[in-house]
Each structure stands twice: as structure tokens, then as C-alpha cells.
Length: 112
Image (tube, rainbow, N blue to C red; front, side, top):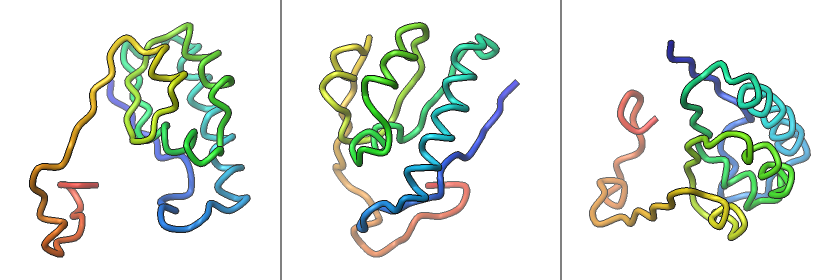
């Protein structure tokens, strides 16, 4: 019972998000909130949610309101302090060595 859903419009890092990105984030968060409230899944992973918060596409207060009822796994950089404070566990990873610095781009099935 594994389900993967791609929400949002894709990567906009390196440029400003557009209005369509904000709308996609709001719709995506509504879907995530519904799944979290349903209790249908034992584990919910919200990959890169912190990026949407960092760029102001979602309100941290609105997200935290839903997260108080469940404890999903959230990934991404730039987590707001309020999210860190509410978390049970926070891990920070650092790049020691990565082939990306040598010009190898992300590959299907490996990095994405």
C-alpha cells in the first residue's frame, strides 16, 4: 500500500515562483491535509514541503495546524523555526562529496 503523488508544478529554484506555483501549492496542501486527517496511511512523507514554506507559498501556521494531529515525515531545506520547534526529530544533512559538483546531472531512478 504505497502511493506516490506528485503535487505542485515542479522545480522553480533559481527563479521566483509564479502565481501558478502558489495556486499549485495551495491545492497540493489541501490534498496533503485531507490525507493526513483521513488516517488512511501509517506514514505520510511530505517531500520538500519546507521549500513551499520558505518561498511563502504556504503559511507555516496553516501547515502546523494540520500537523498537530499527525506526525508526517517532512523533507527539505530551509525549515522555518516554528516547524523545527514542533518536530519530534530534526536531522540536518550536509554534502561531503557529490558527483553533481563534477557536472553529473540528476538521473531517473537514482536522484529523481
